[in-house]
Length: 294
Image (cartoon, rainbow, N blue to C red):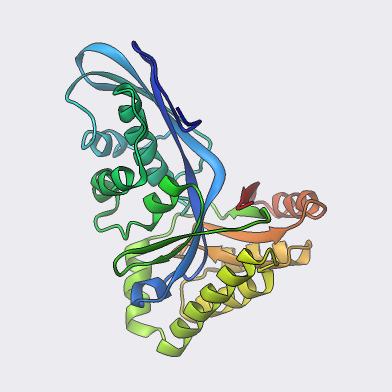
Protein backbone atom coordinates (compact mmCIF):
# COMPACT_ATOMS: atom_id res chain seq x y z
CA UNK A 1 0.00 0.00 0.00
CA UNK A 2 1.10 3.58 -0.61
CA UNK A 3 1.24 6.12 2.19
CA UNK A 4 -1.96 7.59 0.77
CA UNK A 5 -4.24 4.71 1.67
CA UNK A 6 -4.04 1.85 4.13
CA UNK A 7 -5.99 -1.36 4.38
CA UNK A 8 -6.77 -4.07 6.88
CA UNK A 9 -9.25 -6.91 6.79
CA UNK A 10 -11.59 -5.45 9.38
CA UNK A 11 -10.97 -1.72 9.11
CA UNK A 12 -10.59 1.07 9.66
CA UNK A 13 -9.79 1.76 6.05
CA UNK A 14 -8.07 5.07 5.37
CA UNK A 15 -7.38 7.35 2.47
CA UNK A 16 -5.52 10.67 2.40
CA UNK A 17 -5.23 13.45 -0.17
CA UNK A 18 -3.73 16.96 -0.36
CA UNK A 19 -5.33 20.32 -0.98
CA UNK A 20 -4.20 22.62 -3.75
CA UNK A 21 -3.34 26.19 -4.67
CA UNK A 22 -3.51 27.81 -8.09
CA UNK A 23 -0.11 29.40 -8.60
CA UNK A 24 -0.94 31.16 -11.86
CA UNK A 25 -3.55 31.33 -14.58
CA UNK A 26 -6.90 31.59 -12.78
CA UNK A 27 -9.71 33.08 -14.88
CA UNK A 28 -7.62 32.84 -18.06
CA UNK A 29 -8.03 29.06 -17.78
CA UNK A 30 -11.77 29.55 -18.45
CA UNK A 31 -10.85 30.92 -21.90
CA UNK A 32 -8.61 28.04 -23.00
CA UNK A 33 -5.28 29.09 -21.51
CA UNK A 34 -3.27 26.87 -19.19
CA UNK A 35 -3.05 27.29 -15.42
CA UNK A 36 -0.47 26.06 -12.94
CA UNK A 37 -1.89 24.41 -9.84
CA UNK A 38 -0.01 22.65 -7.06
CA UNK A 39 -0.77 20.09 -4.39
CA UNK A 40 0.15 21.49 -0.96
CA UNK A 41 1.56 19.96 2.19
CA UNK A 42 -1.81 20.06 4.02
CA UNK A 43 -4.10 17.06 3.77
CA UNK A 44 -7.47 15.51 4.50
CA UNK A 45 -7.77 11.93 5.79
CA UNK A 46 -10.94 9.84 5.64
CA UNK A 47 -11.37 6.74 7.80
CA UNK A 48 -14.10 4.18 7.15
CA UNK A 49 -15.19 1.69 9.80
CA UNK A 50 -17.81 -1.07 9.81
CA UNK A 51 -21.08 -0.14 11.48
CA UNK A 52 -24.54 -1.68 11.64
CA UNK A 53 -27.37 0.09 9.86
CA UNK A 54 -27.15 3.03 7.46
CA UNK A 55 -23.79 4.56 6.66
CA UNK A 56 -23.25 7.76 8.65
CA UNK A 57 -20.83 10.59 9.30
CA UNK A 58 -19.53 9.90 12.81
CA UNK A 59 -16.91 12.64 13.07
CA UNK A 60 -15.90 15.50 10.80
CA UNK A 61 -13.30 18.23 11.14
CA UNK A 62 -15.05 19.94 8.20
CA UNK A 63 -18.12 21.87 9.33
CA UNK A 64 -20.32 22.02 6.26
CA UNK A 65 -23.85 20.63 5.93
CA UNK A 66 -23.11 19.68 2.31
CA UNK A 67 -20.36 17.19 3.25
CA UNK A 68 -22.62 14.21 3.81
CA UNK A 69 -24.74 14.67 0.62
CA UNK A 70 -21.46 14.92 -1.32
CA UNK A 71 -19.96 11.79 0.25
CA UNK A 72 -23.23 9.91 -0.27
CA UNK A 73 -22.50 9.96 -4.02
CA UNK A 74 -19.56 7.62 -3.33
CA UNK A 75 -20.48 5.56 -0.26
CA UNK A 76 -22.73 2.52 0.07
CA UNK A 77 -26.05 3.29 1.74
CA UNK A 78 -25.38 0.90 4.63
CA UNK A 79 -22.56 -0.44 6.72
CA UNK A 80 -19.94 2.30 7.02
CA UNK A 81 -19.08 4.92 9.62
CA UNK A 82 -17.07 7.87 8.31
CA UNK A 83 -14.52 9.99 10.15
CA UNK A 84 -12.84 13.04 8.59
CA UNK A 85 -9.65 14.72 9.77
CA UNK A 86 -8.23 17.73 7.94
CA UNK A 87 -5.71 20.51 8.39
CA UNK A 88 -6.98 22.31 5.27
CA UNK A 89 -8.94 25.55 5.66
CA UNK A 90 -12.42 25.36 4.13
CA UNK A 91 -13.95 27.75 1.63
CA UNK A 92 -10.88 29.74 0.67
CA UNK A 93 -9.76 28.18 -2.59
CA UNK A 94 -7.41 25.48 -1.30
CA UNK A 95 -9.33 22.50 -2.64
CA UNK A 96 -10.63 21.13 0.67
CA UNK A 97 -13.64 19.49 -1.01
CA UNK A 98 -11.49 17.89 -3.70
CA UNK A 99 -9.14 16.49 -1.07
CA UNK A 100 -12.16 15.08 0.75
CA UNK A 101 -13.42 13.42 -2.43
CA UNK A 102 -10.08 11.83 -3.33
CA UNK A 103 -9.41 10.70 0.24
CA UNK A 104 -12.83 9.00 0.31
CA UNK A 105 -12.24 7.24 -3.01
CA UNK A 106 -8.89 5.98 -1.72
CA UNK A 107 -10.42 4.78 1.55
CA UNK A 108 -13.10 2.86 -0.35
CA UNK A 109 -10.42 1.23 -2.52
CA UNK A 110 -8.45 0.31 0.60
CA UNK A 111 -11.57 -1.38 1.95
CA UNK A 112 -11.43 -3.58 -1.16
CA UNK A 113 -7.72 -4.29 -0.59
CA UNK A 114 -6.47 -2.27 -3.55
CA UNK A 115 -5.10 1.15 -4.52
CA UNK A 116 -7.22 3.64 -6.49
CA UNK A 117 -5.32 4.90 -9.53
CA UNK A 118 -5.50 8.37 -11.04
CA UNK A 119 -8.11 7.49 -13.70
CA UNK A 120 -10.52 6.17 -11.08
CA UNK A 121 -9.90 9.09 -8.72
CA UNK A 122 -10.40 11.68 -11.46
CA UNK A 123 -13.60 10.10 -12.84
CA UNK A 124 -15.26 9.48 -9.48
CA UNK A 125 -14.05 12.77 -8.02
CA UNK A 126 -16.57 14.67 -10.16
CA UNK A 127 -19.50 13.09 -8.28
CA UNK A 128 -19.07 14.82 -4.89
CA UNK A 129 -17.53 17.90 -6.50
CA UNK A 130 -20.72 18.45 -8.54
CA UNK A 131 -22.78 18.38 -5.35
CA UNK A 132 -20.52 21.03 -3.83
CA UNK A 133 -19.67 23.19 -6.84
CA UNK A 134 -22.21 22.61 -9.60
CA UNK A 135 -19.96 22.42 -12.67
CA UNK A 136 -16.35 21.93 -11.52
CA UNK A 137 -13.52 22.15 -14.05
CA UNK A 138 -11.82 19.10 -12.53
CA UNK A 139 -8.54 20.87 -11.79
CA UNK A 140 -8.91 20.65 -8.01
CA UNK A 141 -9.41 16.93 -7.73
CA UNK A 142 -6.95 16.23 -10.59
CA UNK A 143 -4.20 17.99 -8.64
CA UNK A 144 -5.24 16.30 -5.40
CA UNK A 145 -5.19 12.86 -7.04
CA UNK A 146 -1.77 13.41 -8.63
CA UNK A 147 -0.28 15.09 -5.53
CA UNK A 148 2.01 17.12 -7.81
CA UNK A 149 2.42 20.48 -9.51
CA UNK A 150 0.24 20.37 -12.61
CA UNK A 151 -0.09 22.32 -15.84
CA UNK A 152 -3.81 22.22 -16.60
CA UNK A 153 -5.95 23.15 -19.59
CA UNK A 154 -9.71 22.77 -19.30
CA UNK A 155 -10.19 21.47 -22.83
CA UNK A 156 -9.58 17.77 -23.00
CA UNK A 157 -8.80 18.13 -20.15
CA UNK A 158 -5.04 18.43 -20.56
CA UNK A 159 -3.32 17.46 -17.30
CA UNK A 160 0.49 17.46 -17.26
CA UNK A 161 2.40 16.69 -14.06
CA UNK A 162 5.46 18.94 -13.86
CA UNK A 163 8.88 17.89 -12.61
CA UNK A 164 9.64 20.58 -10.02
CA UNK A 165 13.10 19.81 -8.60
CA UNK A 166 13.20 22.45 -5.88
CA UNK A 167 10.55 22.81 -3.16
CA UNK A 168 8.65 26.08 -3.43
CA UNK A 169 7.82 27.60 -0.05
CA UNK A 170 4.70 29.70 0.23
CA UNK A 171 3.10 31.72 2.98
CA UNK A 172 -0.69 31.56 2.67
CA UNK A 173 -2.71 34.48 4.06
CA UNK A 174 -6.41 33.91 4.66
CA UNK A 175 -8.46 37.12 4.37
CA UNK A 176 -11.31 35.46 6.28
CA UNK A 177 -13.83 36.28 3.55
CA UNK A 178 -14.95 33.49 1.21
CA UNK A 179 -15.03 34.25 -2.49
CA UNK A 180 -17.92 33.53 -4.86
CA UNK A 181 -16.37 31.73 -7.82
CA UNK A 182 -19.46 31.87 -10.04
CA UNK A 183 -19.89 35.61 -9.49
CA UNK A 184 -16.22 36.32 -10.16
CA UNK A 185 -16.21 34.28 -13.39
CA UNK A 186 -19.37 36.02 -14.59
CA UNK A 187 -17.92 39.43 -13.82
CA UNK A 188 -14.74 38.68 -15.74
CA UNK A 189 -16.79 37.55 -18.73
CA UNK A 190 -18.55 40.93 -18.78
CA UNK A 191 -15.61 43.26 -18.33
CA UNK A 192 -12.16 41.69 -18.73
CA UNK A 193 -10.04 42.79 -21.71
CA UNK A 194 -8.88 39.78 -23.72
CA UNK A 195 -5.35 41.20 -23.71
CA UNK A 196 -5.20 40.88 -19.91
CA UNK A 197 -6.43 37.29 -20.02
CA UNK A 198 -3.91 36.49 -22.75
CA UNK A 199 -1.11 37.91 -20.62
CA UNK A 200 -2.25 35.90 -17.57
CA UNK A 201 -2.10 32.79 -19.76
CA UNK A 202 1.42 33.68 -20.89
CA UNK A 203 2.52 34.24 -17.29
CA UNK A 204 1.27 30.76 -16.36
CA UNK A 205 3.47 29.26 -19.08
CA UNK A 206 6.48 31.20 -17.77
CA UNK A 207 5.77 30.17 -14.18
CA UNK A 208 5.67 26.56 -15.34
CA UNK A 209 9.04 26.92 -17.05
CA UNK A 210 10.66 28.60 -14.04
CA UNK A 211 9.41 25.95 -11.65
CA UNK A 212 10.80 23.18 -13.84
CA UNK A 213 14.19 24.93 -13.89
CA UNK A 214 14.18 25.35 -10.12
CA UNK A 215 13.94 29.15 -10.42
CA UNK A 216 11.98 31.65 -8.35
CA UNK A 217 8.60 32.48 -9.95
CA UNK A 218 7.88 35.25 -7.43
CA UNK A 219 8.03 38.35 -9.69
CA UNK A 220 5.74 36.66 -12.21
CA UNK A 221 3.20 35.97 -9.48
CA UNK A 222 3.21 39.65 -8.56
CA UNK A 223 2.56 40.63 -12.18
CA UNK A 224 -0.23 38.05 -12.27
CA UNK A 225 -1.84 39.72 -9.25
CA UNK A 226 -1.69 43.14 -10.89
CA UNK A 227 -3.62 41.73 -13.84
CA UNK A 228 -6.15 39.98 -11.60
CA UNK A 229 -6.71 43.28 -9.83
CA UNK A 230 -7.16 45.00 -13.19
CA UNK A 231 -9.87 42.54 -14.29
CA UNK A 232 -11.74 43.20 -11.05
CA UNK A 233 -11.38 40.02 -8.96
CA UNK A 234 -9.12 41.30 -6.19
CA UNK A 235 -10.36 43.03 -3.02
CA UNK A 236 -8.84 45.62 -0.67
CA UNK A 237 -8.09 42.82 1.82
CA UNK A 238 -6.32 40.71 -0.82
CA UNK A 239 -4.35 43.74 -2.04
CA UNK A 240 -3.33 44.55 1.54
CA UNK A 241 -2.31 40.94 2.16
CA UNK A 242 -0.09 40.98 -0.93
CA UNK A 243 1.47 44.28 0.15
CA UNK A 244 2.22 42.89 3.63
CA UNK A 245 3.82 39.79 2.12
CA UNK A 246 6.01 41.78 -0.26
CA UNK A 247 7.04 44.35 2.36
CA UNK A 248 8.10 41.54 4.72
CA UNK A 249 10.37 39.87 2.18
CA UNK A 250 8.29 37.65 -0.13
CA UNK A 251 9.73 37.63 -3.67
CA UNK A 252 6.25 37.70 -5.15
CA UNK A 253 2.61 37.67 -4.04
CA UNK A 254 -0.83 37.24 -5.56
CA UNK A 255 -4.35 36.22 -4.76
CA UNK A 256 -4.89 32.50 -5.34
CA UNK A 257 -8.18 31.27 -6.73
CA UNK A 258 -11.21 33.01 -8.15
CA UNK A 259 -10.82 36.12 -5.99
CA UNK A 260 -13.47 38.21 -4.30
CA UNK A 261 -12.09 36.83 -1.03
CA UNK A 262 -10.14 33.74 -0.07
CA UNK A 263 -6.36 33.63 0.19
CA UNK A 264 -3.23 35.35 -1.02
CA UNK A 265 0.12 33.61 -1.37
CA UNK A 266 3.69 34.86 -1.09
CA UNK A 267 6.87 33.11 -2.25
CA UNK A 268 9.42 32.82 0.56
CA UNK A 269 12.74 31.17 1.37
CA UNK A 270 13.62 29.19 4.50
CA UNK A 271 15.19 32.40 5.85
CA UNK A 272 12.29 34.73 5.10
CA UNK A 273 9.38 32.43 5.92
CA UNK A 274 9.29 33.21 9.67
CA UNK A 275 9.44 37.02 9.36
CA UNK A 276 6.84 36.99 6.58
CA UNK A 277 4.53 34.84 8.70
CA UNK A 278 5.05 37.16 11.67
CA UNK A 279 4.27 40.25 9.58
CA UNK A 280 1.07 38.72 8.18
CA UNK A 281 -0.14 37.73 11.64
CA UNK A 282 0.73 41.13 13.10
CA UNK A 283 -1.39 42.66 10.32
CA UNK A 284 -4.35 40.66 11.64
CA UNK A 285 -4.42 37.83 9.11
CA UNK A 286 -4.44 34.11 9.69
CA UNK A 287 -1.27 32.88 8.00
CA UNK A 288 0.53 29.56 7.58
CA UNK A 289 3.29 28.04 5.51
CA UNK A 290 3.02 25.30 2.88
CA UNK A 291 5.47 23.60 0.55
CA UNK A 292 4.81 22.54 -3.04
CA UNK A 293 6.99 20.64 -5.48
CA UNK A 294 10.40 19.22 -4.71
